[in-house]
Image (cartoon, rainbow, N blue to C red; front, side, top):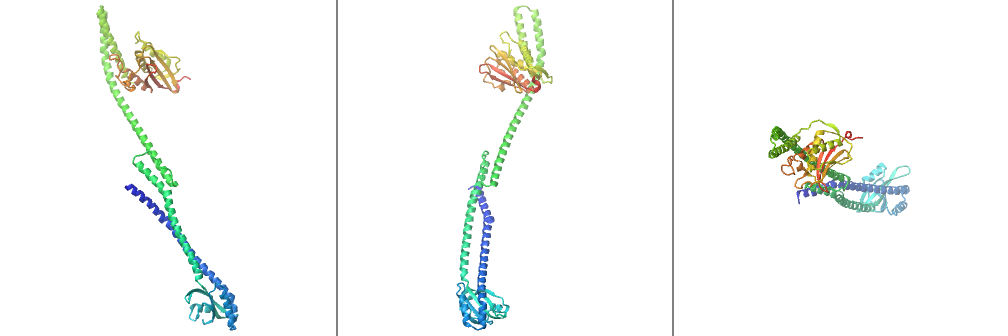
Amino acid sequence: MTKLSSFRYWHLASLQRSLLFYVVLPMLLLTGLAIRFGLVYTHELVTNSMRTDLELIGRAIRIPISDALLKQDTDAINAHLESVFTIGRVYGASIYDVDGALVAATGVIERDLTNSQLASEVVSTGQQQDGYRSVSGQSLFSHFLPIVNRSGQIHGLLQISRKASDFEQSLAKLSNKAWLSWFALALLSLLIMWRGHKRVIGQPINELVTSMRRVASGDRRYRARLQGPLELREVAKGLNHMLDEINAAEQQLLAQQAQQRKIEQQLKEQETMAAIGQVVSGVAHELGAPLSVIDGRAQRLLRQHSDADSQRQLQAIRGQVLRLNHMVKQLQAFAHTPVTSWQRIALLPLLQQAVQSISYELQDDEKRPEIKLPCPDILLYADIARLELALVNVLRNATQAAASQVMIESQQQHDQLLIKVQDDGKGLTSNLTTEQMMNPFVSTKPQGQGTGLGLAIVQQIMQEHRGTVSLKNNPEGGCEVTLTLPLTKQDIYQ
């Protein structure tokens, strides 16, 4: 048996002992005292009843006996005593003179009262007396009355006796029944205490102990059943509430830890992007001037050499310079530090301006983007140049990937504006995730055809505007890029 199990059984035994010593035993003790006092009171009632009966009998015959005693009429005295003796409850009756000498008697009597202190007190005080006496081996209850003549003088003593066993047997039977009933009550009380404790207290406590053991072993989802008395149900309810609070606190702690890790990751990424931005800004600055010199020298040589081979070679040089200039512009856009040059602009002119900007870069075989109408009549508050740059980068990727068309669709959803750019190209590759495509210098285009900064710049600009960018493949084919911008009441025309 484990230590915890031993403690549980000892704890239950302790509760039983507490109930036994502080409830059951005091109740039985009080019941026993009540029975004891009841028996004593009953004994006193019986004694008083016998005293009253004998007193009434004595007073009924005292005057006739007094007259017969004065006349010394022995026959009359004996007749009166015989009449008393015939009463079933009287065991003996006798007449004595003032000195205690026997005058007449019937039944079981005391022959001589000359040395009786009780008889002397009756004669001297004139007060009746009674008490238990032993006569001829019999336990009698005797009542003594003074015999008074008509002038009030005591000239004799009347004793009437009754067997004590007449009521002692009844009292004994009553006492036996009372104590047997008390013993049965004690056994029944102990049984009720044991069964009641086991059912009402023991089982709920066992359930609580089991619940605590399961929780201690790691089962935080277990909950105690609400059973037993109100106090134990409140304990179980408190335990369950405590477990719910612990689980909620743990979940909150895990959420806070996850949020903290996310913030730390964002800070790390921002620090990394800031460092990259500084490097990129320096590289773009250093490349800008030499590329301008190279392009200027190539243009001068084009004017000086008119032969076809020189023209072809110099145009190739200028084409590479143009590509490098485009890369420098991308690097400068990526390293751009946001400024507070925010202005109001309508959505449709913004989209048209972006389409116009990308049209200058399109080749003959590339499809011009089309704006799907109607367009929401919304006035945006934004950094116009930066937001247009984001749209141009998305449109550039779409026109390069499209097979035949590029569509721009905009819609309002509650407090958000969605700008969707769709193409019918091959769609996104499966070897890169959306998050990876947003990283700087990651490109799905063939080497030499992309810088890998377009989507990174778009994401950066959308974050500046508290928006998001998402990519997915269309079920019909091609890719869909969605720019989501938050709207305020001032951004929407009423």
